[in-house]
Length: 112
Length: 113
Image (cartoon, rainbow over all chains, first blue to last red; front, side):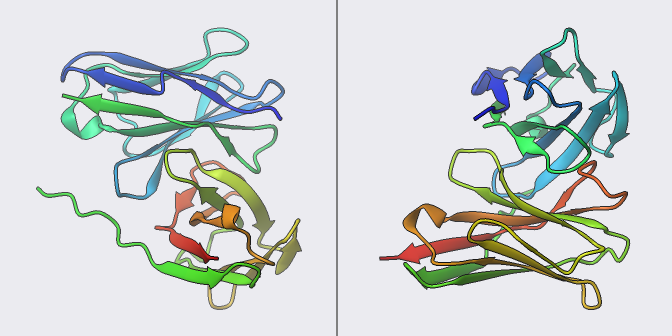
């Protein structure tokens, strides 16, 4: 069964450093999303991406965040200067239409 | 400040019984709803979705009911199995799609042998 793949599974970074979280969406999907889940909190929407541009973003997705689809298979989330409060599980999701987003296993980001 | 974790409601059912997990939403403009299952250390797993022009949708062993009048969503799982143990989230959005899903806090379903 096709699935969304995320790497790495766990990333530890120092505060102020840049991180790039990587995702390979399901191959025929056209809509891509990033969500995050701070430990013990709800899953929160960050950004959606379609046709090579951001289609929607939340208040969390400020200038420190960016997304890119550098080639036909990868979808990345970059955090320019990480803060302690960026520590969370980051989930990539994709969908073939605007319905039914399928999530990856997540990348646990720990900022120290 | 201190971060307070979510206190998840817990539903404990006997293996083989039916489970009903409930979700209340507040945004009357929400028109698309998804139920997700999340096992420990894994990402949310899509179970079933429903649009606001429907009040019931069935899948394999699962049924979602939507009551727009009282802004209530439920997930029924028939003949629960040990593998159904997980946290179940409802998620909603406006605009008819999975953009900008707002997740509920989840219900922890425990299956008793």
